[in-house]
Amino acid sequence: MALVNPSTTLTEIVTTTLRNRSGKLADNVTKNNALLNRLKKRGKVKTVSGGRTIVQELEYAENGTFKRYSGYEALNISPSDVFTGAEYNYAQAAVAISISGLEQLQNSGEEAIIDLLESRIQNGEKTLVNNIALDCYSDGSADGGRQIGGLALLVSGTPSSGIVGGIDASTTVGAFWRNIAFSSATNGGAPATAANIQSYMNQLYVQLVRGTDKIDLIPADNNYFRLYLESLQAIQRIQSTEMAEAGFDSLKYMGADVVLDGGFGGGAPANTMYFLNTDYIYFRPHVDRFFTPLGDDRFAVNQDAMVKLIGFAGNMTVSNRRLQGVLKA
Image (cartoon, rainbow, N blue to C red; front, side):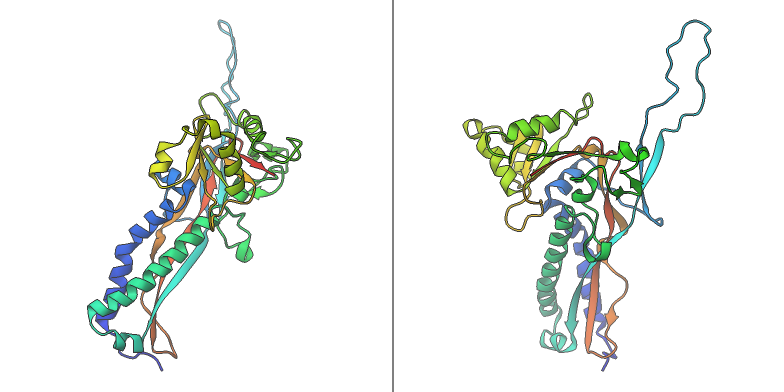
C-alpha cells in the first residue's frame, strides 16, 4: 500500500540534507582520485550546461597559410581549417537513498531521522565517489557502454585503433588523434624491472615533449610505482610536496608527479603508468547532474517507502591525444 500522507517534515529533511551535501560530494570525488585532483587544481573540471553531446574543441593542424616571402610577393590568404570538435556522450550514474514508513516511525523526531539518513547518505556517497573514481580509468565499455570513457579509452594501449570522441584513430585522417604507447615487452624488449623502468620511462617521455608543453602527472598502479620507487632508493628525497599535501603517495620524474593511484581497491590497471599532460584532459559533468538530488521525492506505488536519488551525468574528454602516453607491460 502506498504512503498516502507522507511527512512533509521528512521530505524536507531528506531534500535539504542531500542538497547541502552535493557540493561536498563533488569535492570528495576529486579528492579520491589523483587525476581529478589535478584537473580541479588546473581548472579542468568544467561543467556542461546542455547539448545533445559534450563537444570538446580541439586544434588538429597548424595554420596552412604560413609562407616565407620577399618584397611584393603574393601571400597566401586562403582560409585555413585548423579546428574541429570531438564529441562525447553523457554517461549517467545514480545511487538511491531510501527510508520506509516503519523506519520513519521508529526514528521519529528530526534528530533521529537525520541520524538515520546521515549513515545512509554517507554510504551512498562513498559508493558513488568510489565508482566514479574507478570509472576514470575505464574504457567506457561496462554496462553496455554506459560507463565514463576514462584513461583506458582516452590514452589507449592500442592508439592506432578505436573511436574516441567520434574520431576514428585507425584512419589516415585520424592519425593526429593517436596517443603514444610504449610496451615494456614489445618496445623495451623485456618486462619492466627496477633496473630498466627509468629507461622505459625516458623513451616514452621524449615523445611527449613539445617545447615547454610536457607531461605533469603520472598515475601508476602498485607494481610500476613500486618499481620506480625501488629504482630511486638511493635518492628517495625526490618527492612531490604538492601531491603529498593532497594525501597521495607520490614521487617526481622530470618535473611530473608520479602518483600511486593503485593501492587497495585502486583503479589504475595492473602494470601501467599513464603519462598525462593535464592541460588537455577534462572532467565534464553536467551542471544539473554534478552529484545532485534528482527530481522530486519518489514514493513507491505498492510500498510504504520513500526514495531519493543522487545523480551524475557527464564524461571525461581530451582535446589532444598526441601529447598523452601510456607505459604498459
